[in-house]
Image 1 (cartoon, rainbow, N blue to C red):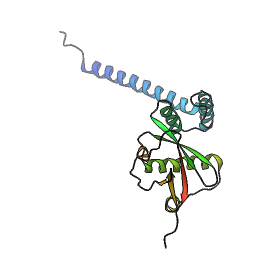
Image 2: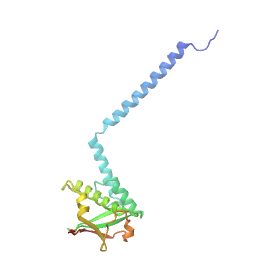
Image 3: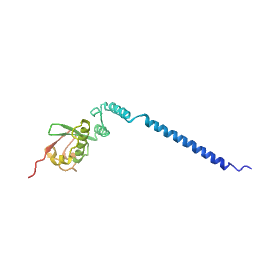
Image 4: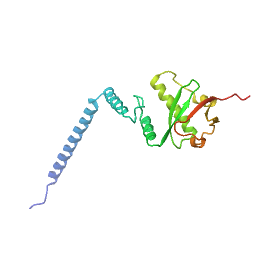
Length: 176
């Protein structure tokens, strides 16, 4: 009389299948761990920086620094496609900061971009560790064609600012 597969045979087959699956999973985990261990962090960073250096040699991205961030690459690409503009911000000491903002940027967006530009510059060059931006914006105006840009919500286009226009820092006069 054939009663079909024996329960013991089914259990053994399931057990062997589970054991085989566990062995395969364990081997895959070990391979992943070996892959992770095969390349130390410092070597990975070196390879990544070499790749970035090659990418920055592209004519589209040649204006970017060697220690470029993804944000800077995206800004440069947006500039190339006309989705962003460069606003040249002039400081009192004569330094001109090329700040990239989207076409629909507000004054607040420009201020944030200036902060980010200075933050990246400080990281690359060292120097002053902290700037009180609250103090800067309380002490200085951004001015375009003699008009103070006081409304943070107003768009740069509303002031007539276009690509490559210059905006200057102007010290606020004290109110008595």
